[in-house]
Length: 189
Image (cartoon, rainbow, N blue to C red; front, side):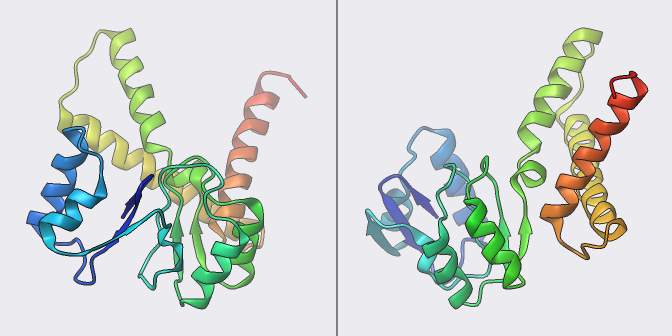
């Protein structure tokens, strides 16, 4: 986990309720410094460094555009990481994404993986325009269905056009197909 000041590495993972709840509370309270986590749980803090050279299970860049460049991509591949999930808007350069794909990593592209926030905003606008009020559980269920459909559409498009399980190509093709069909339905071709 990282922020603008550096990163922490927790060799035991952040998968206990205590750690997970602390991270959520830390972010929600405005104490957005991962060093606080390091201090509380006795893990090492690496000031001024990026985490991309660490051997971990999955990489999830969720903050800045173009944060992972080719030199980071080479470190990531060399460390045997197989999964990248882009949680920010284009956090990996095109060169890095292409390198990941050449090396067989599975990339959850930002246009698909990062669609949750935009989707919930659209659901909020729908509620407002219809004067509805959905519960948190209803919104969450709708969001889960939207995200499931995005993933399925990307997988189906990748397979249909001969790209196997390339979710980057699949998300691009599914998006293009949707826009093209809408334009044709409107006579804009």
